[in-house]
Length: 581
Image (cartoon, rainbow, N blue to C red; front, side):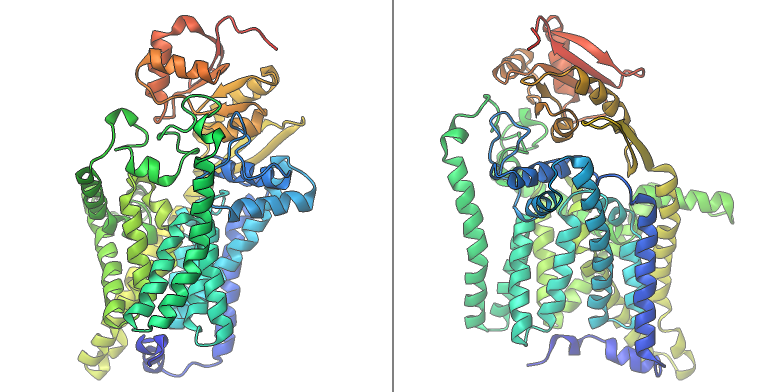
């Protein structure tokens, strides 16, 4: 049977490009340059704890719960409920850090998690290059790795305690090991890495499906059966755990009435807020029909080509911003509109899909199957604004698909062009790659100059914590409110807020999501079942804003404002007549 690498054009291209002097030295030089670039992007952000906003706080709290022997629980929730949403590998890594340091303070443990993600980022960059070198020439592999490394979304997500970077790293290692899986040790490593993917994110089921599907398409039925058996072990273990939690008395009789409502996304499974609500942030729209889910999938599928183009270059906003800056500072360019940019990124996305199809035609199953299955899962979700995040772990494979198509076109040009013009064959792939790279290089200074915001707040153990995080402007007002709440709140009091895990980490107070109810009477009743002492109104948060405003407008006599930032963007309300513990 033909080995996977033999059908890719790397060897032919290297031969066509002439002899390579000191190839090992060039490989080492490329690795050192990439390592240097990776370190350079991290030098301004090696201080302070890792970013624990959003889901990062949930992963951290679960890890601390494990380290403290409390089980796999969300300690911010009343009743310290067991999670059914977050697979356990990243929290286990947090627990290992906490155990090794003998600490649970997120400022202390978070700093060392930042250092670990820094080292992981370097290893991921080098792994991406080694994976691309299996299929591409040195020049193309180096260019594609730079495009991955310098993408604004890669830099941003590497700053967060999210699974995207570890998941992408493990995916890349899987591809490398799978390529060598004719050797028994690499076949075993491939299996372990596939299991690790699923224990990082439930979306890892796409890799299991691609892994088994490859064997079926190659008519290796015994191998397919073995792979399916391996895949079923972690899937059944995780699903059995979820079933046990959902069948427990604590789940059936929650600490407050809406704790396990379908829209309570930190507390329920993905299946519930994807398939039981038309929009998990607008539960008043009701439950979706099969036709609604089909329409959602179709609508999201139409968006996929442009999102693929953005995830390997930059988003449409940065495209326009950089174009305008070049127009102002260098040479005049014709004005560009958003539809033109969208067309450009869509063309790039279509080229990526062309590369995926080309791999399928070459019977190179594992990568295109995994990409297509992952994209299909993404299209089922109701959050198209999150697609760039969900696609991030696929970026190296998408870049590979793009350059596979471009190098195939290069080979065809070499065959068609006369001898004196064959040197021009690589112009297309290098021109497109260089255009995207220029865009990314121009974006990086903007990120660090304008979007790398200073974060200042009071630590729970006293002292001022100061560091920088990306895209933190809207959180500055919230931090001021949490400084106040940390001093004023008392044990036993409960907060209702959108950023529930961050509020808990900052203040130590149990924190829940406010009810997503437009009926003020019902919302008040649900908050009474918590019972919530404080309600945080953050005008920059569009998910909960309308629900909180509807409640306060109708029930203003039941909540008194006790804190407001000077600009009024964040307000804290306390239950009227509440007696302090």
